[in-house]
Amino acid sequence: MSTIHGLEQELADEICELAQDLGIQLTENPVVASAGVYVRGPWSFCLAMNLGLRCGSRVLCEVLEMDVRSLEDVYNAVLGLKWDTLFDSEMTFSVQSSSSDTSIKSNALNLKIKDGIVDAFKRALGRRPNVDKESPQVRIMARVHRGLLSVSLDTTGVPLAMRGYRSATHDAPLSELLGAGLLRMTGWQKLCRELRKENPERVYFSRVETHQNRSAEQQESGKESAGELKRRIPEAIVLSPDLIDPMCGTGTFAIEAALQLLNRRPQLDRAGFAYEYLSVIPSSVLKQEDRIRRSLRAQELSLLDAFKKVAQYRRDAMGQNTPSDAVSPFLLCRDTDSSAILAAKKNAENAGVTKLIQFEKGNVLGLEVHAPAGVVVMNPPYGVRLGEEEQLKGLYKEIGDTLKKECKGWQAWILAGSTALGGSVGLRPTRRKKVFNGGIECLWLQYVLF
Image 1: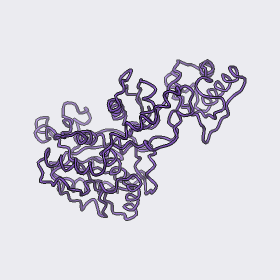
Image 2 (image 1 turned 60 degrees about the vertical axis):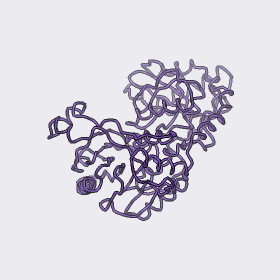
Image 3 (image 1 turned 135 degrees about the horizontal axis):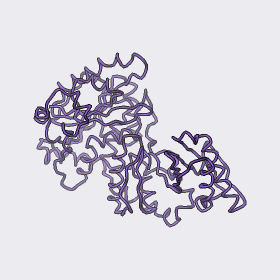
Image 4 (image 1 turned 90 degrees about the vertical axis):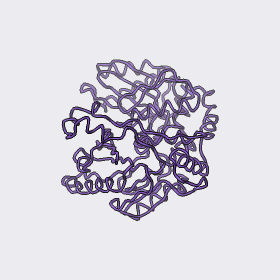
């Protein structure tokens, strides 16, 4: 299962939750790898992952793993597979490969794998499938890394990151997959799962990163002693259903937060997956697709139930004076750009979650909160061009000042485009996680505000 660099553990945790929710026993626990997670289970779980995961991009079925030293080794390994049992010769296919080994170039690797597949079909059937680089029915993914060749069948097709609700765009939109994964890091999914219980109890985020398990580099840059740091940082963070994105853009954070709260799986209404073209998946398994869809849909919350659960949690778990029939939106999208607000509204409407989200035009520096606890998430500009980063440091400093003044009792998470920009916030991050937004290496920084 592939994902974005930095979200591997979030994906592994989500896989375990999905298996638990469907009562599926995995053959082995998920194993975290680079930009992906390895998992073994029944074929039905392959379908379930495509239908139900938020933090994954493609569900890949590995069909070959072998040590190779040359392109000839690659060709012979691929030729030895019974490809006619994996997909039909009438299907079109493509090969997408990469190599980190200097002795095997990616372009040549692609051709050798294609030749091996074609020749294997000719040898077995006397005919071959056609190549379609634009819209193949079957997609083969391959990689050579440190002499190890891995070849997989893509069971997904259109990447799972493309949810289908974002018809309106704006400058540098945050991907749906990345937004969902970053939200999990805030503890939002933990709160959402608790809210689905009959009597949800107060939920706390796991203890923030301590001085002892911070990196040596972070420790050297700090000015406080371990004792001072421990006294200042709360032991635990109360998770609240109040969430604000004060620089919302196309609304990805709020929309993904709403979908997680409602437990609406992102691809449940999608028609057409690549697994439909693969002979390797038994037809008896494909017939289970409707049952899996129904099972996942039965676990969703209605909008009315979501409002009731949030009101119940606020009243019983957090001790707030909240009427049981409160229906005010508790997710806030805010932006200075009117076109961004319109795009966010349109996308939320497509996703069916507008009633959970309040939209308003406003500057992040004018942010005010009206709840004792909650989470602020934001994706400020990065300044990727030369000189832009220096100009943005002032904005990051003003964001930090606003959070410290207005958001006491809350936690804030900022996706910073560099260590320098993150340092300009002027607050000490209690957690930091390296993730990639497109090709940009970023830091997802948590600030506990007190």
